[in-house]
Length: 203
Length: 202
Image (cartoon, rainbow over all chains, first blue to last red; front, side):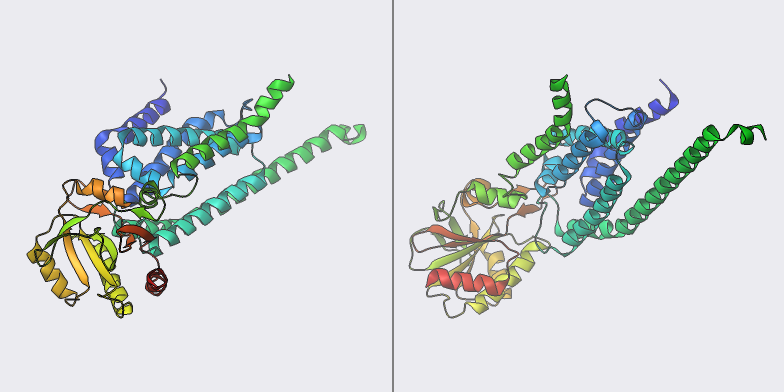
C-alpha cells in the first residue's frame, strides 16, 4: 500500500470512528459543514486517479455528476439530516453515498465541458448562499433533532463560507481557462511546425 | 452493440432517477421534507378524530381536551423547560389570544399541552406569567404514552439524550365534537392564523 493510500485509509477510518463521528454529527454546523464535505473530499481524492479515464458508464461525465447531485440533494433534506443523527445505519449510508458521490464527481469533472463545470460551480455557490439564508432566517425548526441556535449557526457559517466558495469557483474557472489557452497555443504551434514549408524548416 | 449504447446512454438518467425515487419515497412524494410535516401527513387528512387528550390543568383539574364541548379548542404542544422555541411560540399564542379576544372563552379555548408532565403549580406560575388569561389553559398530558398520543395527533416528538424535548409546534384546531379540523404550521403569520380560525368557527 502506498503512503497516500495509507493516509487516505486512515482518514476514512478516523472520520468513521464513533467518537469523531458522534462529535461531528452531534452539532448541526459540524455535521453539515465539516462531516458531509469531508466525506465528499475523501471520495474526490479516491476518484482523482480515474478522472482522465473514460468509463463506459460515465459518458462525458454525466453519470458521476448526476449521482453526486442526487446524493447531495438527498442529504440536504432536513428529514435526512435528522435520520443521520438518530440512526446509525442511515449515518453509515450517508458516509458511503457521499464517498461514492465525491469519487463520481472527481471521475466526471475532467470529462465535463467547461460550461457545465462553470454552471456546477455557480450552482454550488448559489445553493450555499440560499441554504445560509434559509437556516439563518427561518423562524421554525427544520431539522427536529437539533435546536434553533444550531440551525441559525449553520446558516451563519454557510453565509461565511459562501465568498470562499465563490472565490474557489473563480480560481478554478481561471485555471481551467488558462489551461485551455495553453493547450490551444501548444496546438497552434504544433500545427505551425508540422505545416511549415521546407524552406522555413531548413532555415 | 445498440443495446450497450442504450445502457450507456441511460446510465446518467438511472443515477439521477435512483436518487429522485428515493427522495420521493422518503418525503412522501415531495410533500414532507421535515419530520414535522411527515408526522402531520402520517396522522391523516383533516377532519380526523383526535385521540383522547386527558390532562391535568394549571388548577389541578383533570379533563379530556378532545371530549365533546361547546367550544372549539386550539391546541399546541410545549413544556416549561423548553429553552428557545416554546417561549417564542407561547408569546405568539398570547398575541393570537389577544387577536381572537372576542371569541375566547365562549367559543374558543386555547390549550398549551405540556409534554413533560410538569405539575399544576408550575403550570399555574407560567399561566400567571402569561397574564392569567381565562380562555387559555396550560395542562400536562396525563395519558400514559405521551409520545404515542402526540404522534396520533400528528405532532412529531423526540426526547433527546440531553433531556431536552424536540417537538412539533403545529396549532391544531379541534371542533366541538373533538375532531381535528385544521392544522396550522407554526411559521404562519398570527394575523393569517387568526383569520383562518375565525373562518372555521363562523
